[in-house]
Length: 432
Image (cartoon, rainbow, N blue to C red):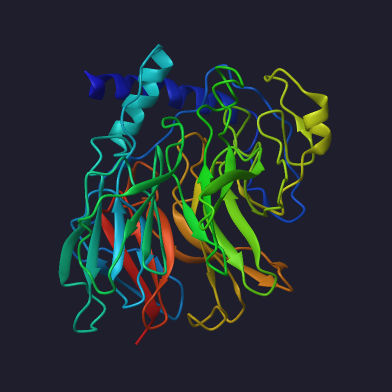
């Protein structure tokens, strides 16, 4: 039944997309520090367009930029989303997925059917796997269950001898012994979060290891059920590890996922997924520095304080909204983020940020489905994004072989990429 409904939804969506394209070209991706964002056009019938999840055939891999090579570091995972590399080079992979929520309307069911076809919703593995490349050949041959029975684990961080997990309902701390392949002790909850909606909870330690930042997304698109249920969401938290306290560090961030520190300035940066239903490029997802106490507009406005008239307004909140730093294109679902020093990979001589773009499901021409690099200079983005990995999406946009999510630096000047449709962690290195 779900499959049949998904096909009907796809047909309706295709008709809506054709109507939107009629008489005009599809909006080009809005990118950079000074983007020109098209006028918003509220959609009575939201665009639903997502490729069917296919996975990778034997020998088929993503397309790497010139001078790079890519191989499967570990395969046969179950929806790998995020990666953490331990000091001994063991690689931890969080395996979790969105689960079906309450379906109240036909549109809810349409979204569920579409997401299921794209392998974006299902039974969550709720575990963290440890992968070890003992012989140093760039392929993990040892796999252990490091931690299980979690609640949609995502972010991970090791500070001293404590391992932290960002579950959808809070941050949990576990005692860790160096070199251990499994955690067996009970966890200690540091802070509770409201589950549901945007469920991922990314984690990042401060440079001195005294604080832990956690990203918490909104429940809905534009506070559809009111602001009361959104309280404490659409924010980045700061946890004081010694005091055991937490506070909202910055707010108005619809879905802040990946976080990274720019090492010259020690400023926190994040990638944010913006709201839906206003057009292919309205507003773009973005990369931004995060100011302590800053408010970034959601749900009242976006970018340069452009008001979203679908939302009951608060002029005082609009007036204080901070514009993001760098547009990444509409609906790219930019999730993964890590800092990459210049020269880590050939052809990428500048310092900059690597971004895993999971890919759109609501754009008439699909966007994202790539791993990109944004160069930095003097602590700021300094040029257009460049591809590191592409080829996750078929040219006709009907199927996806994979969808990149978490990115992090691995051993031996490598880049690791979690692919939750391919069920693989990819390893990117200099070509031989």
